[in-house]
Image 1 (tube, one colour):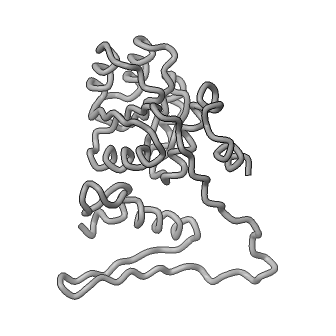
Image 2 (cartoon, one colour):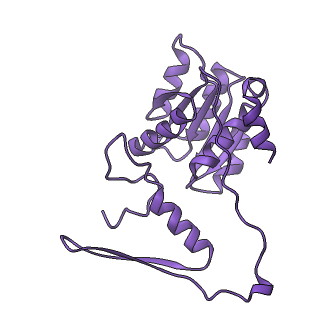
Length: 211
């Protein structure tokens, strides 16, 4: 467990609790500030986390900018997202995030399953969240989806930045790098739907986006 606790979406909690993003976010923030996070744990005794950060600069040289938490967005009822990822924990966490934002979620575990969904006589999802790092080539899955539905909106996801260009060349509408926060995920999907669905968002949501 200790070897995996900093991995995005890894969690030991039940299916209805925890996203597995807490410690992954902590490590990402600490690393971005030039620090490090260590953990010491003994069964039955407890666990200690230590965060080491570089000494702060003087007040006059500090950056004044700050990161503002993204606004909460509620999607119109019936907005459907197809989540394709071979990791069940990732699908579970992403599903909970999107359902809390008002989306309906359909899951697929590999490229063949997602293509099969499009071949069947079913409703087309509004967005496909497609992991490029699945065993089946993600780029080929994008091309197959374009064959069955040229208008489908595809948000490609990968922990490998070099796959960003390949995703766009294969026909993806957007790219989201792992690990991502719940806010970034919701915003990325909102951007893909900002055309036909933007008018259906509440005025409060639109005002929040403009801030």
